[in-house]
Length: 162
Image (cartoon, rainbow, N blue to C red; front, side, top):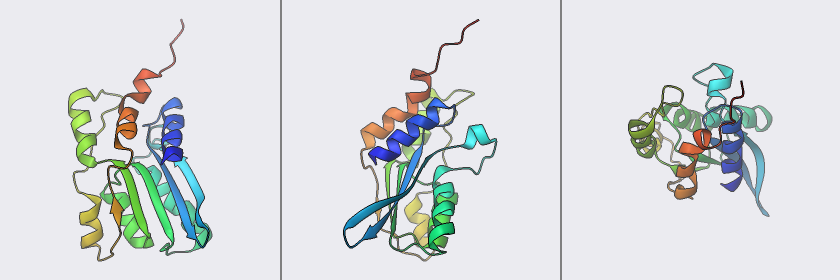
């Protein structure tokens, strides 16, 4: 998760939502990092460039359609779209930091025109259940560190010079 947090900060530094994800593969010797990335929704201009979806797409292109030996770590709970991709890829497990509820609460209090922090209040566990694919989920992992990412962009925005 620490690598996902670092990726989230890099995303914030380039003007994106500070959200990061990592996919690991379980091997006989432990976990191996296969992919890591930060969100590109704002810089790509595409509302579907969620980091979870992009890392799943990347890993699937190299390891095949189904990923039962892989774990997705995300600083933020996967939205319904990304959770659906986890179902279709048969991901082995999901670990996330802040929930969709956390995201929505922050957006209501401190969202800006640039960073609305909208949320899709459909828990990923519900998508997995309705998708008929059991995915072990650990939520709230390093939650406090992931909550700090909500304000990362505004706290670290470079000063504009005239």
